Length: 505
Image 1 (cartoon, one colour):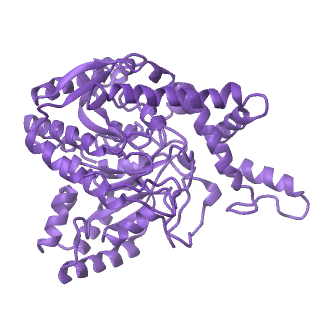
Image 2 (cartoon, rainbow, N blue to C red; image 1 turned 90 degrees about the horizontal axis):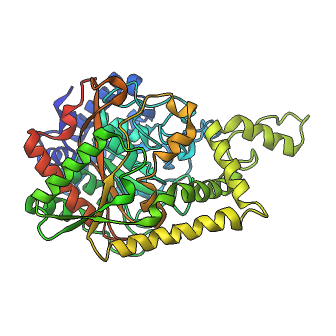
Image 3 (tube, rainbow, N blue to C red; image 1 turned 120 degrees about the horizontal axis):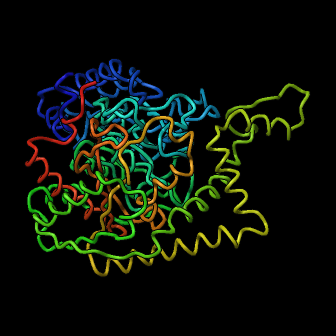
């Protein structure tokens, strides 16, 4: 592997600024890495090599002119849910296959303005619906730690790209945990910012009140740098919050240097029960000991309505999805089937949606349509909204006692490819720990904390475990503060960054 691809994003940006390397050299190294391993990881759906090299040349010119920013010239992978002008965008669905968008999402436009170099579009569950990346209409992505395991979903391609050294940074979207869960299963850092602080303009919608763009990185500082570059108020997004970006980079640097003296950490008791594997629990408990050694006051906190998060989410998200995907009707967007003069408009719509949507998307459209239908709206959807309010109140009460909340990010290590097809309801339950922060709109991060034995492999296989850190709304910096302190202490103990322990591809 080229040494350039082993650098952190912060190290690479510094090397480009000081002339030790160039953005063209870095981009070329990553394109070569993608060519070498992506057939096995399935991380990318489209690689835009010519565009990437052209942007890298522009970045090098900015460096020479003295106008470079903190990440100028650094490559980045982009989840295929972000609309990118002139670059294929499918949201992992056959419905949009071949579409070349005429406009750019706000987030990717901001990264281009900052001089980052987009390598291509990464694999994802179709319309971001899934927890394993196996619902991609094209191919599943694989976990870099074990190619027979899922990297998680729905941003699994982005997580696999960062975990396999195919990109130093990546963009994802988190609706019910789709950044944090794949980050945990792939051994990298993933952040869901406060809802409304990263623009949804130009992000193909799954569930509008939940979708949140966010960053992936190999380190906490890398993730903070990308977070800062992509965030900020956007007048084109009606849900965008007009507030200053939380000082996440400053927090990441401070946490690594100063520890956590005076900070209170709440362990959510309701997130330590159902389906939690022994190995995951052991690594989580060990991480709590590290937090205590850094000066944090760790105490147990009860959030009684968190246990209803799965039920509420799987009514609210499919209901919003059924509305958002109604536009894919054969008339206004993408695929059209049966338009041969022998079928009615209604038949063409039906044939098109039958051919264009995969099984998981159809399942959620049916579930959401049922929940919103006359006679059931109050019984299901309205009740789910009430639970959402109670979960937000649980967060508010907890944050009167502690500065942050923590839990395991996922109750298990990465599960085998194919499991989602045999037991989709069991896969839904794996989102138990990530859903409360999604429903409340609070920021939450996953940071790797250790390796656990895989119970399916008799202890011969060890796979990553992530710790989830949740903070009050608009206090994203607290997640970075805690994660950076934890990362620094664990890196010092193991003698290197976590991802260096991954097997070679």
